[in-house]
Length: 414
Ligand code: SAH
Ligand code: SF4
Image (tube, rainbow, N blue to C red; front, side):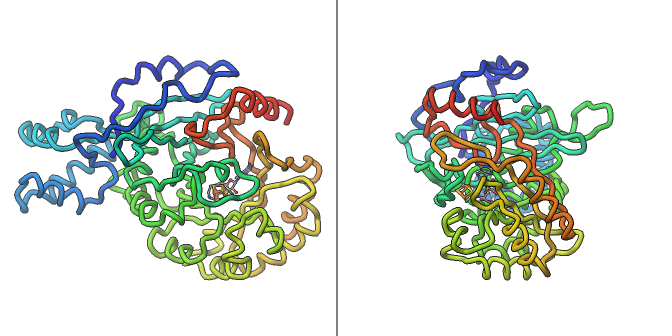
């Protein structure tokens, strides 16, 4: 379980000002993990909470009601301490306090981009006492009609897509459901976005969730499923499944399960229309080639004209951005309820790729649009704080000062 951070003082110092251009991501030294004495209830299902209550002697007849109360305080009100839970008796609160916490991942740094994007660096237990703690990043992207939170599913990624920075990170572990739900809770904490929030129109800031941070969500299926069921529960955080998108590089056997067991929107990291090139860009293609991937999309439970599958396509100059590619793309998506999301490549130090020229992106987009597909070009957000797609990489694999400088220089020239 994850450590608590109730002392936000060191973070607040950074909350309203942009960090200096060369500020390191890491604000405090990476510590060795010391396991917590008390587990957090965040990330457990209602039944699991009831079981835990049974374990501390709560009578069977009370467990369901108590777990409902806890659920409300944790996921509607965002309570950070049992002492806030005023509808629960004092004695019960004291008992809960003795055995559990409602801890979220510890926020070790917050950065705010000049476009309003925010990135949080979260510290997680390594799982083994004495090992270094782990870190993941979580990004909030405000837009006029929505606020999207980009959530991580793993520390690092076992896959090695050749254009993705996360794929170069060696250290990998799966996140627990509590660590995945915890990212949404941390964002709501930091943005003051819980039920009692006093806004003029009562609108929520975090309205959408995309599983597009670090990691391959379908290689951590059960934890991602359990977490998303909590996030979409309408007696709790209440973000509808239509506003949650899971992006996969193409783990075919778990695509159907995603539709059946989670029911969220699906995005596929396509990036190439020929197996030969996709084997190189997205190596999982060697295991699950295009024909199988597209069949899984045709069969995706719940896909319809109103619930289209998004095909992500990163624009790499001279690699996959020709009109020939656009034509093949349109041909191959026939019969699938699809929309296309073109992503300008975000560079990182040491990469051999470049972003396509703007002209070429426009031509590509126009062709696809004229063929009847919505094809928005994703505006890169938060590049100055390295928060854009594919730039996330935990500080456990720290960038050197020179790498950081190179990355910022690239961001400035684009
Ligand atoms: N592992 C999952 C989800 C995380 S990546 C997946 O691959 O789908 C989210 C999206 O960003 C994916 O489509 C990924 O291919 C894309 N991406 C990765 N690196 C990128 C980069 N450097 N520039 C632009 N997009 C990138
Ligand atoms: Fe992993 Fe996705 Fe990056 Fe590929 S693009 S290495 S699957 S995070």
